[in-house]
Image (cartoon, rainbow, N blue to C red; front, side, top):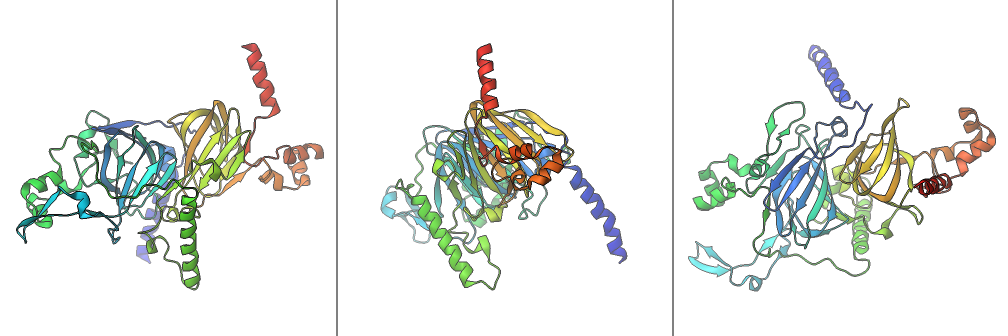
Length: 480
């Protein structure tokens, strides 16, 4: 009992520290604070010490991989969700215990020889590796904590990806710092000349490196049964290319091409739903294993850029597409979801709030005026959001977005695999669901005004420009 009483002050102090990280009286747009250069690209990082990011338990990065670039194999302590802004490439992930299901015929590799010391002769061999996926613009790509992955740009333009790193995921048993563990190269070389990354709650500088550099040469030689020269190359101590390297020759990787036929992705989703239904029927009395049961075959990619997949569409205003664990089950393991939005000129997204998650908005194109209101009845943000900027919308804070003259396109990451949103205006809103008499007495208005509040907007979530907005635009044009 005495030991328990001694623990209480520590728990109370810890809770106060956690709560103090959510001081959200004044939000502001976030831009990259650091850039790490490499031979074939660069990575931009947002300052994870920003209070809004700390409150959301998240960090934000942007990778630009140039043509023929290869993002070196690495893994992280945290769940990660990536969006492909531009380009196309290959994405490979190595999961423990999964078989090498992709294999090549030896005839495809004629001219490549391997030496077998036991046989004492040279022989031809092929290649075997785990599943490789093609990624393209509009794809959401899930990255499981602790699984190694690599990315190759096989297109003609830069491959650009943005990424949320969710350090508050329950799979992360370390601290709230981003920890990248590289398996090749010498990543720290690429960060020279830039501002070093600082860990949360400390002033200690940190840098990413190759984990093999922490081992003795002799132990690595024995582990892989290789010569000393090869073990030193694995450690990469003399490598000056950084974390994104240029591929000098074409990569010979076994992978099927993405089918161009109609409905291929829908058939893939249907097969996954059928597998999920059969598992539920077979184990209705037991708790489902979830992601770990089908990790080797589970989809890690879903495209949310196709207008036909929009969940909300208004031909006069735009569209919004959501992605959660129902449509991509692996997201339940990551505790993340996503939203892609396109607004036409001067269109508006209904005032709304997320009931069970934070949202991190990244601007892809155009601009918008955004307002956010908090629980104290005051505006915590009122400003313009532009390309390559990030804005954190805290849980239950109400946000309104109005597109500028160039329109507005964004992707939002939510810190729940099934984020629920509540609208405050429109046909399926809180105001619409309240009785007229409640509105009359709550706002001190007439019954006619209460009906206007409830029924003037028949649209759901994406609102076309109002007549007042149109009149204002005409006045502005006349003045110019």
